[in-house]
Length: 246
Image 1 (tube, rainbow, N blue to C red):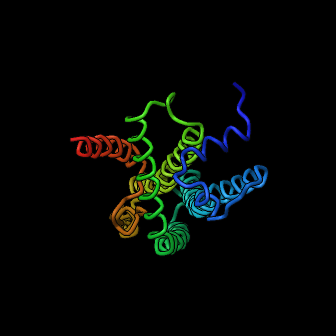
Image 2: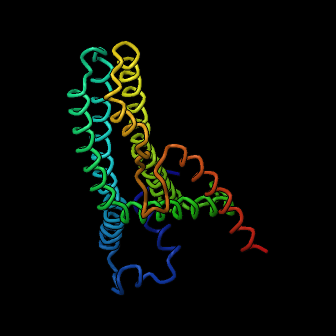
Image 3: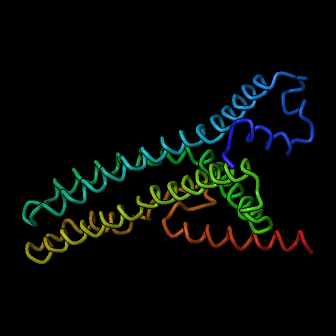
């Protein structure tokens, strides 16, 4: 049977306990007006919730990617330098530029720590709720509206969650690569040119703690956290469902 606008509207109205409540308390008799109000309300619901949070994640991810690219450029610059040209002045110049990038990352952490954590919590609960309901109800037995909303919100929430952890989790990797390249180049200078006077800079870089973006110091944004989230999501969803049915 072909899917029509009227069929979708009728399907949604059947799931509503009160048709007048669904139309903001208005007793509307005209069927075309009902269709217009229904699709305006649905469009606004789908537009305001996911797109607003997606814009925040897009901005956050863009800033992280810019910092990631700048750190990689510094690492490549170190790799392309010959040991004899990677002197004290060059090392100081690179470390000053890296310090500016870190200041930007600290500003990003201070600005987005709380919003991103709330978005992560929202997406985790959204994905958990959808997963739990599909463990109870069959996909084939679900209504068209439920299938559409589950696919729309579920895919959006999962992709946003993965995007946050993947992009922000690339920064510690870039930082470690920077340390490795800096250590390799300064170690070569020490072996061939006996530059013991540069060891303090090398120690400063290698002993610097890894910078990891977090959500209010509760969740560390690393790529390995993706698997932890997926495992925890499935585990606690099953536990909550078992508690509810027992």
